[in-house]
Length: 204
Image 1 (spheres, helix red, strand yellow):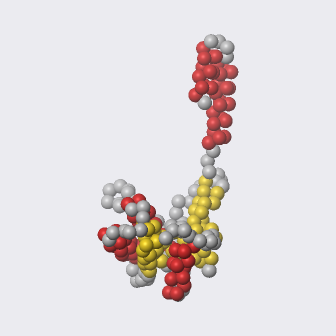
Image 2 (image 1 turned 120 degrees about the vertical axis):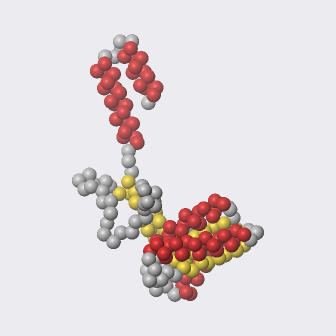
Image 3 (image 1 turned 135 degrees about the vertical axis):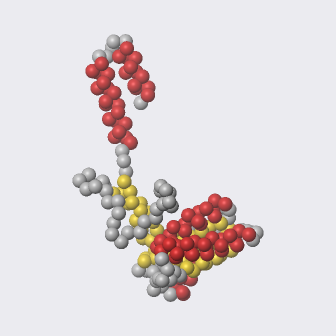
């Protein structure tokens, strides 16, 4: 684009183009650029995804952290306690000498605990031998089923965040959405859960 504009300005200064012609050419270039750039709106959605045939990764250690949350606690308390417990267990693993690849799986019922993927990704950045995974399951799933899901995920594939819903394995993917120009974007919804970070004054 810079070269095309330069040519227009040179032609304008040499009198080969009139100001009106130069303006029309500049508008045409900008229009082409806007068409190429465009805007794509997407939203995360759970999508069915079957396990792969097999996993070639051999883990020297495998840790499963079952997380159960009490209804008597607030959302903040539940998340803080679970995050702290998982952090302490990962810290204890790191204090030992990692002789090979280590897999840590957090099996949880509360979908809010999907946010712990940030903790696992940070741990993986600190030590490339570390692999972390969140497995979300419904509250009615038995202990045997939880253990089976963890073993299958270990043996047949790896996704950092997996959900089992009504017997179906799901992972997060992206789905394109169209912008409705007639309706303003909905900032908040009823019964929604929101995390506020930063802010002004005492809001944190």
